[in-house]
Each structure stands twice: as C-alpha cells, then as structure tokens.
Image (cartoon, rainbow, N blue to C red; front, side, top):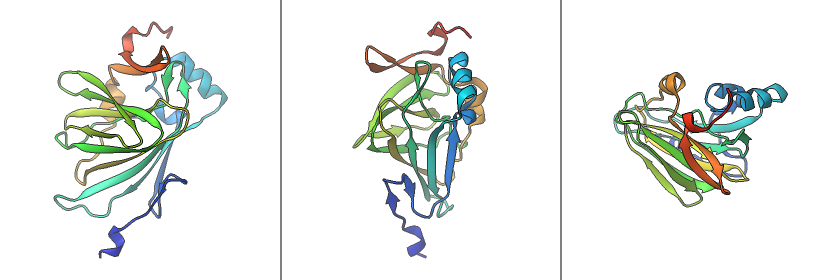
Amino acid sequence: MWAELSTCLDLDAGVIVGAPVVRRHLSDLAGCFADRAAYAALRAGEDPLLYTVSGVEAADGAGDLHYGLGVLFPGRVGGEYFMTKGHLHARRDAAEVYIGLRGEGCMLLEDEATGESRMEPLGQGRVVYVPGHAAHRTINTGRVPLVYIGVYPADAGHDYGAIAAKNFRMVVVERDGKPAMVARDGLNIQQ
C-alpha cells in the first residue's frame, strides 16, 4: 500500500514518473485568448503544445490529496503570454497550493462572486495559495518552460465549463518589459 503512494518527479522530462500526462495544444484553448485574430493567425500555421500536466490521484477518501506537475511553455498569442485553460473547483470551497520549481510566471486569480482579480508571481521557490471560490490560471511570463506542482483536495474536482462560458475578466500581457494585468475588454483589439 505505501509503495504505490510514492512517486518521483523527473523535472528534466517534466513528468511525474509513471503518471498519465495530459497535453494541451493551442487548439484546446479556443476562446481563452482575448485577441481572436492573433489566435486564428497562429492556429492557422501550427498547433503548438502550450502545456502538459502529469497527475497523481492515488487516493480518493475524505482528507486525501491529489497533485500534478505542470510544464507551461513560453510564447505568446498577440500580446498575451501562453497560459493554461484555468478552472474553478467543482467543490467551490476547495483551496489549492501551487509551488514553482523552474522558470517564471504568475497565477491569475479571480474571485467568483466579486470578480476581483489579482496576479501572483509563480517561479522557482515561490508558493501561491489559491483560496476556495477562486478561478485560477497559470501564465508563463518567461523565456523558458515554467515548471510547477499543484496540490489540491482529492474531492475538489475541476470545473472548466464555468471559465469557458465567461472567461477571466483580466488578461496578462507585457507592458514596459514586465507582465501586467489589464482588463480583457480594455485591450483595444480588433476582433
């Protein structure tokens, strides 16, 4: 019983050894990026891999934890950095912790009830606490892959549909050489 709960992180390969890997390409993030024309132009030429997640769901009892190792590649769609789809937890009060292992990026957090947003740095040695009722998305603001681990309650679940229906109010773009959080509807993008 105990041996099957132990795993090994292969940071060079960006996987949890023996765990299944989910791969998300640009086509999997249709509707996530604010600049639809830039998305269509990039998508017309290729379908780059944006990120991978390998996860361990070893136990499902009350109080158990799941965890996943994410690798988010560098790049941009228009002015927006590559990002994950983002999600809420199906069990809305479930919190999550993200631990940065390599690279640099940030977490975009949005309170589901108020819409209040904030951008928290995530990179090597940084820890981001995601409270319950917060939509969250990981963003790579650097030039190398962002590698991180997320730990969450086994019964948290993932609700991607709520984000797909209305998206995040804010986006992260480069301003004056640094990541900046700006209103999605204030980007002045020709749609």
